[in-house]
Length: 199
Image (cartoon, rainbow, N blue to C red; front, top):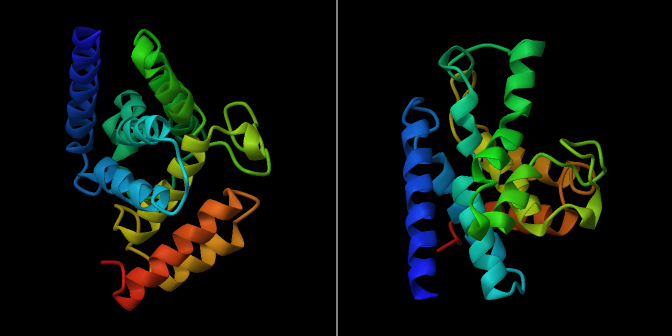
């Protein structure tokens, strides 16, 4: 049993290293998964979550972008709007990640969270159009944290947005794009950061 757990840890470490290598392709994405994971940790601190589930959510967050291995540099590094075909490649990233993780039984829960990270609370997301509590809790945390990361850090095509804009977006999209409880906590964390009270 201990040997199996050690092997699972080694596999996860190897996958995290792969994600780091992928992020190194794009200077704007460097350390993105770690920043998202840290924000998810802060979000989870405000909720009562079983420690085993919490660890799975954290690992899923670290690995959430592993499907980016399928995205060519010409799309990843593009500095203007993506066309329809390029958007389709990006939308397929969670499914690519799920295929990568499918043979690893110890990451089955993480795989489901990653697969459904682009679902929306109102059911208009993908790949399966899940809505509300049908969406795995880890996927809901990842969706909010990814959005915060995207808004608060520079991208090739735009500058970081002010925290006030991010808080407004979280509240405006709570109950449509995002789990409303998680979005509200995320907005509160950003408010604390803005006021310098986030420790």
